[in-house]
Length: 108
Image (tube, rainbow, N blue to C red; front, side, top):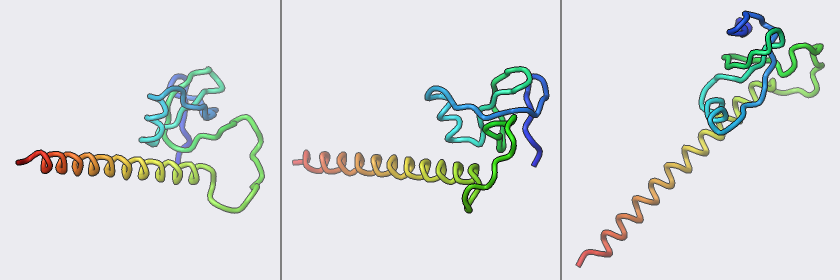
């Protein structure tokens, strides 16, 4: 996979930054886009694919066996999306059941 580059200057010296606000967090949660800051021109934008948290630092040693951080992030987001979808479906189903019961109880 090719490393993401800055849309303003074309540099590959990017680092991830936190999504700010509800809109940016929604984009991050429901897509594969990640916020980045370019170390060369200070441009902030969105890119697909893995972006290191700290591009200027030396590579970190492996601290523990397991999946890479990006894979854990993606799995966590997938679980949150599924939980949200399940709770939404449950709420819709419960609302429909209440409407049916109220309609049935109101009939003569």
